[in-house]
Length: 130
Image (cartoon, rainbow, N blue to C red; front, side, top):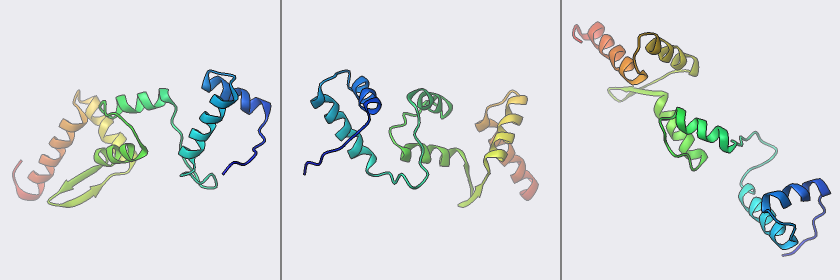
């Protein structure tokens, strides 16, 4: 189905720059691509768009994982924010994780290594061994 769509000159100019062309056909194709992608997002609800620069920073922070989708980001954050002991999930708030990471850095340790030491200390506390 074809429908006429009226857009501002400024918006057309922005799409023209992205399409690297003044050709109406190329700009229209780019607009269709945007619409097909963003039709999944309800603009009446909160959503997050991550710039390419911030995506790169997130990938670095998340140990170099390649983020191809929001599902990848959610999965990696969940992995980092989760601890399981005997199949029981222990959940930390972002502030708690930041505090553990800060203590690890102050002790010249990695988050992984410091967390392992904490778990061993907990085991020693509960079971009399480390």
